[in-house]
Amino acid sequence: MNPAAFAAGVVRWQRSHGRSGLPWQGTRDPYRVWLSEVMLQQTQVATVIDYYGCFVARFPDVRALAAAPLDDVLALWSGLGHYSRARNLHRCAQAVVAQHGGRFPPSSAALAELPGIGRSTAAAIAAFCHGERAAILDGNVKRVLARCSGFAGDLAQAAPQRELWALAESLLPEHDIDIYTQGLMDLGATLCTLRAPDCARCPLKRGCVAHAQGRPEDYPLKSRRAKRGRRSHALLWLRRGERHFLVQRESRGVWAGLWSLPEHESVDALQRYTAGWRGEGRWQPTIEHALTHFDWTLQVLAWQWPARAQPPAALPAGRWVTTAEALAMGLPAPLRVLLSR
Image (cartoon, rainbow, N blue to C red):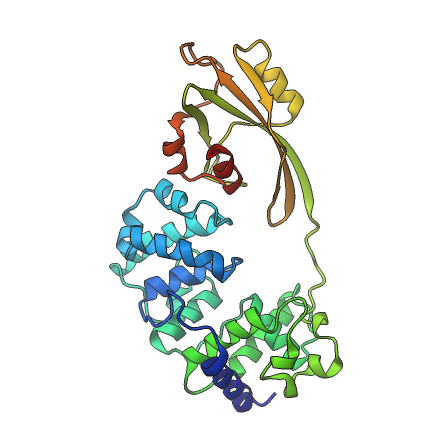
Protein backbone atom coordinates (compact mmCIF):
# COMPACT_ATOMS: atom_id res chain seq x y z
CA MET A 1 0.00 0.00 0.00
CA ASN A 2 1.22 3.47 -0.89
CA PRO A 3 0.57 5.55 2.26
CA ALA A 4 0.32 8.91 0.48
CA ALA A 5 -2.06 7.61 -2.19
CA PHE A 6 -4.15 5.74 0.34
CA ALA A 7 -4.56 8.76 2.63
CA ALA A 8 -5.24 11.11 -0.27
CA GLY A 9 -8.00 8.83 -1.54
CA VAL A 10 -9.64 8.71 1.88
CA VAL A 11 -9.44 12.50 2.32
CA ARG A 12 -10.85 13.24 -1.17
CA TRP A 13 -13.74 10.86 -0.63
CA GLN A 14 -14.53 12.24 2.81
CA ARG A 15 -14.65 15.81 1.56
CA SER A 16 -17.11 14.97 -1.21
CA HIS A 17 -19.06 11.96 0.07
CA GLY A 18 -18.42 11.51 3.80
CA ARG A 19 -20.96 12.19 6.49
CA SER A 20 -21.27 15.81 7.58
CA GLY A 21 -23.64 17.90 9.65
CA LEU A 22 -23.87 15.43 12.50
CA PRO A 23 -24.38 17.20 15.85
CA TRP A 24 -20.93 16.27 17.18
CA GLN A 25 -19.07 17.36 14.05
CA GLY A 26 -17.54 20.78 13.54
CA THR A 27 -16.34 21.06 17.14
CA ARG A 28 -12.96 20.79 18.82
CA ASP A 29 -14.50 20.43 22.26
CA PRO A 30 -12.96 17.21 23.66
CA TYR A 31 -15.97 16.64 25.90
CA ARG A 32 -18.39 16.49 22.98
CA VAL A 33 -16.08 14.47 20.77
CA TRP A 34 -15.44 12.00 23.61
CA LEU A 35 -19.15 11.69 24.33
CA SER A 36 -19.97 10.97 20.69
CA GLU A 37 -17.15 8.44 20.34
CA VAL A 38 -18.34 6.50 23.38
CA MET A 39 -21.96 6.55 22.26
CA LEU A 40 -21.05 5.40 18.76
CA GLN A 41 -19.31 2.28 20.02
CA GLN A 42 -21.51 -0.62 18.88
CA THR A 43 -24.43 1.74 18.18
CA GLN A 44 -25.78 3.13 14.90
CA VAL A 45 -25.48 6.87 14.16
CA ALA A 46 -29.24 7.25 13.72
CA THR A 47 -29.82 5.92 17.24
CA VAL A 48 -27.10 8.04 18.82
CA ILE A 49 -28.28 11.41 17.45
CA ASP A 50 -31.26 11.78 19.81
CA TYR A 51 -29.38 10.43 22.82
CA TYR A 52 -26.47 12.77 22.17
CA GLY A 53 -28.73 15.82 22.04
CA CYS A 54 -30.49 14.91 25.29
CA PHE A 55 -27.20 14.13 27.01
CA VAL A 56 -25.58 17.44 26.07
CA ALA A 57 -28.69 19.36 27.11
CA ARG A 58 -28.68 17.68 30.54
CA PHE A 59 -24.88 17.56 30.99
CA PRO A 60 -23.43 20.43 28.91
CA ASP A 61 -19.85 19.90 30.08
CA VAL A 62 -17.66 17.41 31.87
CA ARG A 63 -18.13 19.06 35.26
CA ALA A 64 -21.91 18.73 35.02
CA LEU A 65 -21.57 15.06 34.14
CA ALA A 66 -19.08 14.41 36.94
CA ALA A 67 -21.35 16.05 39.53
CA ALA A 68 -24.48 14.13 38.50
CA PRO A 69 -25.63 11.02 40.39
CA LEU A 70 -24.92 7.82 38.49
CA ASP A 71 -28.65 7.03 38.54
CA ASP A 72 -29.31 10.19 36.50
CA VAL A 73 -26.66 9.20 33.96
CA LEU A 74 -28.04 5.68 33.62
CA ALA A 75 -31.58 7.03 33.29
CA LEU A 76 -30.59 9.20 30.35
CA TRP A 77 -28.62 6.32 28.82
CA SER A 78 -31.54 3.91 29.19
CA GLY A 79 -32.28 2.17 25.90
CA LEU A 80 -28.86 2.84 24.38
CA GLY A 81 -27.53 -0.49 25.65
CA HIS A 82 -24.04 -1.61 26.71
CA TYR A 83 -24.50 0.16 30.04
CA SER A 84 -20.89 -0.26 31.11
CA ARG A 85 -20.21 2.62 28.70
CA ALA A 86 -22.39 4.92 30.81
CA ARG A 87 -20.71 3.85 34.05
CA ASN A 88 -17.26 4.37 32.53
CA LEU A 89 -18.38 7.71 31.12
CA HIS A 90 -19.32 8.86 34.61
CA ARG A 91 -16.06 7.56 36.13
CA CYS A 92 -14.02 9.22 33.41
CA ALA A 93 -15.76 12.58 33.87
CA GLN A 94 -14.99 12.45 37.59
CA ALA A 95 -11.35 11.60 36.84
CA VAL A 96 -11.04 14.51 34.40
CA VAL A 97 -12.36 16.91 37.05
CA ALA A 98 -10.35 15.44 39.93
CA GLN A 99 -7.05 14.86 38.13
CA HIS A 100 -7.05 17.46 35.34
CA GLY A 101 -9.13 20.34 36.69
CA GLY A 102 -12.02 19.65 34.32
CA ARG A 103 -9.89 19.79 31.14
CA PHE A 104 -9.20 16.75 29.01
CA PRO A 105 -5.46 16.20 28.48
CA PRO A 106 -4.41 17.02 24.90
CA SER A 107 -2.38 13.91 23.98
CA SER A 108 -3.69 10.50 23.02
CA ALA A 109 -1.25 8.87 25.45
CA ALA A 110 -2.62 10.85 28.40
CA LEU A 111 -6.22 10.38 27.29
CA ALA A 112 -5.74 6.61 27.17
CA GLU A 113 -4.87 6.67 30.88
CA LEU A 114 -8.39 7.80 31.78
CA PRO A 115 -11.06 5.24 32.80
CA GLY A 116 -12.96 3.78 29.87
CA ILE A 117 -10.92 5.49 27.13
CA GLY A 118 -9.09 2.97 24.99
CA ARG A 119 -6.29 3.56 22.56
CA SER A 120 -8.51 4.10 19.52
CA THR A 121 -10.94 6.46 21.26
CA ALA A 122 -8.03 8.44 22.70
CA ALA A 123 -6.53 8.79 19.22
CA ALA A 124 -9.84 9.96 17.75
CA ILE A 125 -10.21 12.68 20.41
CA ALA A 126 -6.61 13.84 19.95
CA ALA A 127 -6.92 13.86 16.15
CA PHE A 128 -10.23 15.72 16.01
CA CYS A 129 -9.50 18.22 18.78
CA HIS A 130 -5.72 18.76 18.60
CA GLY A 131 -4.64 17.51 15.16
CA GLU A 132 -2.42 14.80 16.61
CA ARG A 133 -1.19 12.20 14.11
CA ALA A 134 -2.60 9.26 16.02
CA ALA A 135 -4.02 6.08 14.49
CA ILE A 136 -7.48 4.79 15.26
CA LEU A 137 -8.45 1.14 14.94
CA ASP A 138 -12.10 0.58 15.73
CA GLY A 139 -14.09 -2.20 14.11
CA ASN A 140 -14.88 -0.24 10.95
CA VAL A 141 -11.27 0.82 10.43
CA LYS A 142 -9.94 -2.68 11.03
CA ARG A 143 -12.21 -3.89 8.24
CA VAL A 144 -11.10 -1.19 5.78
CA LEU A 145 -7.39 -1.71 6.43
CA ALA A 146 -7.57 -5.51 6.45
CA ARG A 147 -9.42 -5.62 3.15
CA CYS A 148 -7.31 -3.01 1.39
CA SER A 149 -4.04 -4.63 2.45
CA GLY A 150 -5.19 -8.24 2.25
CA PHE A 151 -4.18 -8.60 5.88
CA ALA A 152 -4.24 -12.32 6.62
CA GLY A 153 -3.47 -12.21 10.35
CA ASP A 154 -5.98 -13.62 12.80
CA LEU A 155 -7.25 -10.66 14.85
CA ALA A 156 -8.24 -13.02 17.65
CA GLN A 157 -4.51 -13.15 18.45
CA ALA A 158 -2.36 -10.41 19.98
CA ALA A 159 0.52 -10.40 17.46
CA PRO A 160 -1.66 -9.73 14.37
CA GLN A 161 -3.45 -7.02 16.33
CA ARG A 162 -0.11 -5.30 16.88
CA GLU A 163 0.75 -5.70 13.19
CA LEU A 164 -2.48 -4.04 12.13
CA TRP A 165 -1.85 -1.18 14.56
CA ALA A 166 1.57 -0.72 12.98
CA LEU A 167 -0.03 -0.64 9.53
CA ALA A 168 -2.56 1.96 10.68
CA GLU A 169 0.24 4.16 11.99
CA SER A 170 2.29 3.81 8.81
CA LEU A 171 -0.60 5.15 6.72
CA LEU A 172 -1.16 8.37 8.67
CA PRO A 173 -0.98 11.51 6.50
CA GLU A 174 1.09 14.56 7.39
CA HIS A 175 -1.91 16.86 7.05
CA ASP A 176 -5.72 16.71 7.32
CA ILE A 177 -5.56 14.07 10.05
CA ASP A 178 -9.09 14.93 11.25
CA ILE A 179 -10.57 14.53 7.77
CA TYR A 180 -8.62 11.32 7.18
CA THR A 181 -9.71 9.87 10.51
CA GLN A 182 -13.37 10.67 9.88
CA GLY A 183 -13.05 9.31 6.36
CA LEU A 184 -11.82 5.92 7.53
CA MET A 185 -14.71 5.71 9.99
CA ASP A 186 -17.26 6.68 7.38
CA LEU A 187 -15.92 4.31 4.73
CA GLY A 188 -16.23 1.39 7.11
CA ALA A 189 -19.69 2.44 8.26
CA THR A 190 -21.25 3.21 4.88
CA LEU A 191 -19.40 1.37 2.07
CA CYS A 192 -16.94 -1.18 3.45
CA THR A 193 -19.59 -2.83 5.58
CA LEU A 194 -19.39 -6.21 7.25
CA ARG A 195 -21.83 -7.80 4.82
CA ALA A 196 -22.46 -6.82 1.19
CA PRO A 197 -19.72 -4.13 0.92
CA ASP A 198 -20.36 -1.58 -1.84
CA CYS A 199 -17.04 -1.99 -3.63
CA ALA A 200 -18.31 -0.30 -6.80
CA ARG A 201 -18.47 3.08 -5.04
CA CYS A 202 -15.38 2.67 -2.89
CA PRO A 203 -12.57 5.17 -3.63
CA LEU A 204 -9.95 2.58 -2.61
CA LYS A 205 -11.07 -0.29 -4.83
CA ARG A 206 -8.23 -0.04 -7.35
CA GLY A 207 -5.63 -0.83 -4.74
CA CYS A 208 -7.78 -3.11 -2.59
CA VAL A 209 -6.45 -6.66 -2.32
CA ALA A 210 -9.73 -8.12 -1.08
CA HIS A 211 -11.62 -6.53 -3.99
CA ALA A 212 -9.09 -7.90 -6.49
CA GLN A 213 -9.52 -11.35 -4.99
CA GLY A 214 -13.29 -11.03 -5.19
CA ARG A 215 -13.82 -12.01 -1.56
CA PRO A 216 -13.94 -8.92 0.68
CA GLU A 217 -16.21 -10.68 3.20
CA ASP A 218 -13.30 -12.97 4.12
CA TYR A 219 -11.50 -10.06 5.79
CA PRO A 220 -10.65 -9.45 8.54
CA LEU A 221 -9.97 -12.93 9.85
CA LYS A 222 -11.01 -13.59 13.43
CA SER A 223 -11.10 -17.26 14.30
CA ARG A 224 -12.25 -17.11 17.90
CA ARG A 225 -15.92 -16.27 17.89
CA ALA A 226 -17.80 -16.22 21.16
CA LYS A 227 -20.53 -18.83 21.10
CA ARG A 228 -23.89 -17.27 21.82
CA GLY A 229 -25.57 -18.59 24.89
CA ARG A 230 -29.20 -18.66 25.98
CA ARG A 231 -30.70 -17.82 29.35
CA SER A 232 -34.21 -17.83 30.74
CA HIS A 233 -35.56 -16.08 33.83
CA ALA A 234 -38.84 -14.92 35.29
CA LEU A 235 -39.61 -11.35 36.37
CA LEU A 236 -42.21 -10.20 38.87
CA TRP A 237 -44.09 -7.09 37.80
CA LEU A 238 -45.72 -6.25 41.11
CA ARG A 239 -48.15 -3.35 41.18
CA ARG A 240 -49.99 -1.85 44.12
CA GLY A 241 -52.46 0.79 43.11
CA GLU A 242 -50.64 3.05 40.67
CA ARG A 243 -47.15 2.08 41.80
CA HIS A 244 -44.63 -0.47 40.55
CA PHE A 245 -42.09 -2.29 42.71
CA LEU A 246 -38.51 -1.97 41.37
CA VAL A 247 -35.17 -3.22 42.63
CA GLN A 248 -31.69 -2.00 41.73
CA ARG A 249 -29.52 -4.64 40.11
CA GLU A 250 -26.04 -5.43 41.36
CA SER A 251 -23.08 -3.33 40.25
CA ARG A 252 -21.77 -6.15 38.05
CA GLY A 253 -23.38 -8.35 35.44
CA VAL A 254 -26.23 -7.78 33.01
CA TRP A 255 -27.99 -4.41 33.39
CA ALA A 256 -25.57 -3.58 36.23
CA GLY A 257 -26.79 -0.72 38.39
CA LEU A 258 -30.10 -0.34 36.54
CA TRP A 259 -33.54 -0.52 38.10
CA SER A 260 -35.50 -3.60 37.19
CA LEU A 261 -38.28 -5.97 38.17
CA PRO A 262 -37.32 -8.61 40.76
CA GLU A 263 -35.75 -11.57 38.95
CA HIS A 264 -36.29 -15.27 39.67
CA GLU A 265 -34.47 -18.28 38.30
CA SER A 266 -37.50 -19.79 36.60
CA VAL A 267 -41.26 -19.70 36.18
CA ASP A 268 -41.59 -22.44 38.78
CA ALA A 269 -39.47 -20.50 41.27
CA LEU A 270 -41.60 -17.38 40.82
CA GLN A 271 -44.81 -19.38 41.19
CA ARG A 272 -43.53 -20.85 44.45
CA TYR A 273 -42.56 -17.36 45.63
CA THR A 274 -46.06 -15.96 45.03
CA ALA A 275 -47.98 -19.00 46.30
CA GLY A 276 -50.76 -17.89 48.65
CA TRP A 277 -50.47 -14.21 47.76
CA ARG A 278 -53.47 -11.90 47.73
CA GLY A 279 -54.62 -10.40 44.48
CA GLU A 280 -54.03 -12.02 41.14
CA GLY A 281 -51.20 -12.63 38.69
CA ARG A 282 -51.24 -12.87 34.92
CA TRP A 283 -48.42 -13.96 32.66
CA GLN A 284 -47.49 -11.39 30.02
CA PRO A 285 -46.22 -12.04 26.48
CA THR A 286 -42.71 -13.45 26.57
CA ILE A 287 -39.86 -10.97 26.10
CA GLU A 288 -37.02 -12.15 23.83
CA HIS A 289 -34.03 -9.88 24.41
CA ALA A 290 -30.73 -10.17 22.51
CA LEU A 291 -27.56 -9.08 24.29
CA THR A 292 -23.97 -9.14 23.06
CA HIS A 293 -23.16 -12.74 24.00
CA PHE A 294 -26.49 -14.41 24.65
CA ASP A 295 -30.22 -14.40 24.00
CA TRP A 296 -32.40 -13.86 27.04
CA THR A 297 -35.95 -15.14 27.44
CA LEU A 298 -37.90 -13.27 30.12
CA GLN A 299 -41.26 -14.48 31.41
CA VAL A 300 -43.09 -11.66 33.17
CA LEU A 301 -45.75 -12.26 35.82
CA ALA A 302 -47.86 -9.14 36.35
CA TRP A 303 -49.38 -9.17 39.82
CA GLN A 304 -51.93 -6.59 40.94
CA TRP A 305 -51.75 -6.36 44.73
CA PRO A 306 -54.76 -4.85 46.53
CA ALA A 307 -54.11 -1.13 46.94
CA ARG A 308 -55.23 -0.93 50.57
CA ALA A 309 -53.44 -4.07 51.72
CA GLN A 310 -49.95 -4.15 53.17
CA PRO A 311 -47.41 -5.28 50.54
CA PRO A 312 -45.92 -8.79 50.74
CA ALA A 313 -43.52 -9.17 53.66
CA ALA A 314 -40.81 -11.09 51.81
CA LEU A 315 -39.97 -8.50 49.17
CA PRO A 316 -36.30 -7.63 48.60
CA ALA A 317 -34.99 -4.10 49.13
CA GLY A 318 -36.52 -1.85 46.51
CA ARG A 319 -38.79 1.10 45.76
CA TRP A 320 -42.46 1.64 45.03
CA VAL A 321 -42.63 4.19 42.22
CA THR A 322 -45.20 5.67 39.88
CA THR A 323 -44.92 5.08 36.16
CA ALA A 324 -43.56 8.60 35.66
CA GLU A 325 -40.97 8.09 38.39
CA ALA A 326 -39.97 4.71 36.93
CA LEU A 327 -39.47 6.13 33.44
CA ALA A 328 -37.19 8.80 34.88
CA MET A 329 -34.93 6.11 36.34
CA GLY A 330 -32.30 3.99 34.64
CA LEU A 331 -34.39 1.17 33.18
CA PRO A 332 -33.39 -1.50 30.66
CA ALA A 333 -35.04 -0.89 27.30
CA PRO A 334 -37.48 -3.85 27.31
CA LEU A 335 -38.73 -2.98 30.80
CA ARG A 336 -39.12 0.67 29.85
CA VAL A 337 -41.44 -0.45 27.07
CA LEU A 338 -43.33 -2.77 29.44
CA LEU A 339 -43.86 -0.20 32.19
CA SER A 340 -44.91 2.55 29.78
CA ARG A 341 -47.90 0.57 28.53
